[in-house]
Length: 305
Image (cartoon, rainbow, N blue to C red; front, top):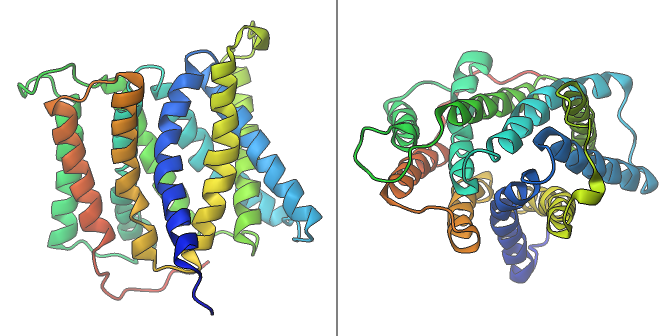
């Protein structure tokens, strides 16, 4: 395989770093005018539908009925439980803190690999990393540490931990379920299925009743457009390209760059608080992610699919 030009690699990394890091602010802008589950449904119905149609036009095989069933099961965990709760939480807490809480996903994936797949073992380093990540969450949510600033709403924090766990469980199950051979078709199908689940949830929660699209400002619609095009289509394409040309460890660095981008963007662009509490909690969580993503995994049983 020919090595791609350095500018392409740098552009792809910049895309997943900056675009995925900035989507949390775009979500915050959108959910202040569009109900959260409805906004998430629109994002993934449009992005997933566009990807599936585009790939079919290019001749990529459509998912089989069995692969669609797997996509809908994974979408319940990754899109309904994760993204739905993320969009909802951002109606209550800052976008930067939401990104930091979502950075706990690698810790939950490690736990799921231990419990579900048996492809990971609990070592002292992994135990220390998990403890450090939990300490970061405690710093963000505790009001008794004398760090100043308001503690993060615990209900929202709990929802985000559930969201991270759901994502990790979905990520682990992708190794066991039949999915399309094309990674892009698999992602598009899951996005589309997720949009369906989120639309059903929005309807069940009454978010569609009384919603008037004409009352939504251009800024909120632009935020949705950014989430669809840049956040879901462009950044994902860059991610898929990178995993074919770079090591998983390098590509995985987005997990601790995105929260930093989100926190700084929230502070400078939206006036979100950036006090000792946010800095200390973010540092703990990101160090935990760094320890987990750079850890050498001992040999274990191969996962079946």
